[in-house]
Length: 340
Image 1 (cartoon, rainbow, N blue to C red):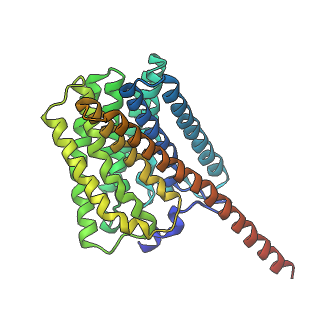
Image 2 (image 1 turned 90 degrees about the vertical axis):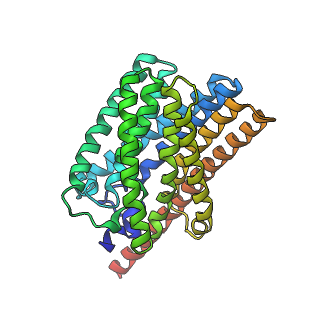
Image 3 (image 1 turned 180 degrees about the vertical axis):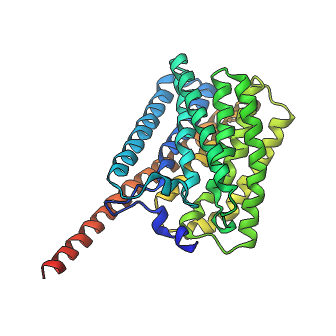
């Protein structure tokens, strides 16, 4: 089991015949989350709609590019896709693909309603199929508790709650309520197993530590989803979910020293969507309450989450360049030894 949770499984593949690790799917999800923040801020501050459209376009390009890279590498790999999907560390991360597509569908709905609705429905259907499959896989009884990490919230809980939000934004209220119920139920179920794993098993390997940030996403997305379902009218459930989000943020603040000891990797993209979800919820509350200087605070929140995502994106590019150069040097040294 320890072999399944090593850095090699979650770091980008350097061998030509390996598949691209599924944690790279967090890139388009983080960018879609940032686009969602800009959409909320655009409505709150009355900013030009072109700003949010630009961020949605960037997220869409990243989604297509990431999928293309995975497909291209997959055709050259000697590992079947099922190997990744049934991998206890990587498998749950495959849910990121339809989750990001749901957000893209809701974003597209603002410009092209029919196309956005179709994309949202297809994405939710794909997420439902994957959730049912992976849940049946987990129910075989072969999964050790040590394998559970923050990514296990994604296939059913996060997918259900993001599905509720995007379905409500596209006017599919019946689907939104059903998705919300599924997401909330499995958020509670997975939380139990996740906390048991953290408390009763050895410390999580460094490559998986960033997935702890995903704990923030379910209540933050659930708050936004329920506000949308209820027609923009805040109620006690919305307030309760916001309070839970605030508590989860407090836990993350306590974890900052632990995060600070981690070497940078593409796993840091796990921080982006949770941060964006909290930022979107914070801007929503600022718009609802409109306290003193709320517009300036909103700009500050928007700038902070944008800087976070841009910083991680910049470091990712530099990290990939350095990794690629190191790989070339290793191959060159190996070839010289062979010739010698």
